[in-house]
Length: 342
Image (cartoon, rainbow, N blue to C red; front, side, top):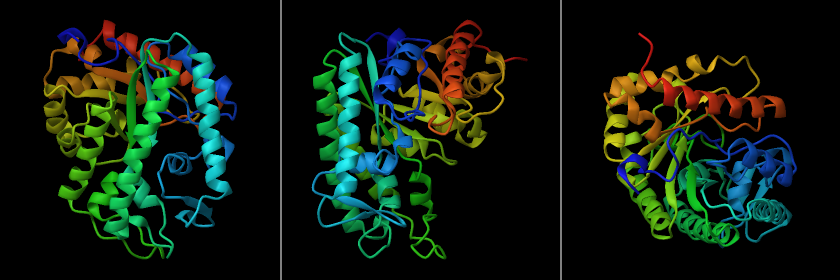
C-alpha cells in the first residue's frame, strides 16, 4: 500500500456506522451495497428486537459465556437459552444475506461488534451488578470476546473471500469505564474506575489478535472525552468519532494519531430524522479540525472517511438513505474543497 493509499479505503471514502432501520437483512444488504459501493458494512438491524440489539448481537459471538434477557437487561446465565438462540439466528441470517449479495466483491468491507469494555459496562452478573464490578469476570469476558470475534472474522472472510475486512469495535462506554461513571445496579452510585493500564492491556491484546488474523482493527466511540491516545497506543489503526462533539482539547491527540498513520472515520451527518445542512456546511467540522491539527489539506481526503454521527437504526428509511447520500456529497466537497472557509 503506497503513501497515497495507506488505508484499506480509497481516498474520498464514506460509509455508515453499523445499524440500519428495518428488519429484512437481504433488503438492508442490497441498500448498503448500493449506497456504499466502495466501503460497505454488514448492517445491524436492532429493530428486530432482543438479540439484534448491540449487546445481544455481540453476545451471540461470545464463547462459553452465555447471556440472557432480564427485565433490567442482558445478564450472564448458566446455559444458552432462547434469547441467545434468537441472537445467533439473526446473525446467521445476516451472514447468509451478506454472502448472497456480495458474490465477487473485492474491496474493503466493515463488520462491527460491541467492544469488551462496553459489554462489561452493560451486561449484568448473576447478582445483578454490572460485570465491570468484577475484574475476574471481565478477564473471562475479554478472552471469550476475542475468541468469538476472531471466529466471526474467519466466517466473514470465508463468505466474502476477496474482501479486506475492517473490524470495528464499538466502545461508547469506554470513557465512562475510565472515569468511574458506570452506574451501580441500584442507580444511586457509580462503579469504580478501571485502571487505564489494564484497559490498555486488554485492548492491545484484542487489536493485536485482529491484526494477526488479517483484519484491520478500528474503534468507534461517539461519546465525549474519547481516550484517543490510549486507543492509538493499543494498536487501533483507525478511529471512528463524532466530529461534531470534538473539542480543541483533543486536537493534539488526534494530530499525533494521524501522524502515526491512524485513519479517521468522522461523523458529521445526523443519525436521526432532522433537517440536514448542505454538504459544504456538513463537512466544515472536518475541514476545521484538519486545519487546526496542521496537516496538508490535500491529505484529508486520504485519511478521513465521512460517516453519520452514529448508527442509523433510529432513523426512518428515507432519512437513512438521505444521510448516506449526504455522506457521499460531503466526501466530494472534502476532496474538491479541502480548505476550511475563511
